[in-house]
Amino acid sequence: MGNKISTFTEDQLDAYQDCTFFTRKEILRIFNRYRMLSPGNVPEDMRDGKTNSFRIPLPEVEKMTEIKENPFKERICKVFSEDGSGDMSFDDFLDMFSVFSEAAPRDIKTTYAFKIYDFDCDNFIGRDDLERTLTCLTKNELSDDEKQFIVDKVLEETDLDDDGMLSYIEFEHVISRSPDFLNTFHIRI
Image 1: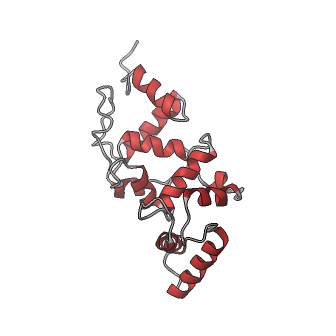
Image 2 (image 1 turned 135 degrees about the vertical axis):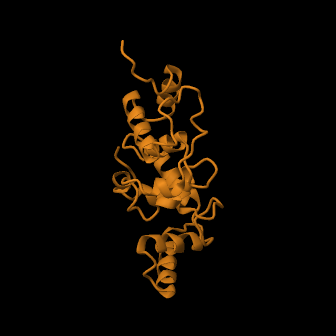
Image 3 (image 1 turned 30 degrees about the vertical axis):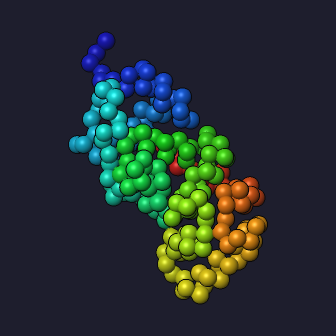
């Protein structure tokens, strides 16, 4: 038999498989990726059911090669961390990878993309959210006038009810017309 360490119980793996788009093998590979971010702090054996008691700090998660160049890395981590701090438990980390997997459906990806762009968490993407999105995308290289011009144009094209912000339905409509969305909203493991 040998002395191989089991990371999770069969029930834990079944539960993870049921609520993600991953196989057992992929779940274990993602756990190893998580553990390697902070090997001294994350135990190899998670069978005691305390997968949420260990959190990797936001700065460590942001260094991960899969997201370190993403202009929204901080926002992504905050959206997926249960407490909104960006510090991630394994469950948070697995959820993030699941949503960004190629197997995740468009509607789930759209929901999380909306949350990422909704910086103030008011369930709308308003002018300030759009400006912050532009700042992330352009590394703050646009003048205030340029940002205002772009925000005005975006709202002119996408704000169907002319209320000065995008609802989830309006955002979903924009995404439905974007053929590249599924190709760009993913992280490979």
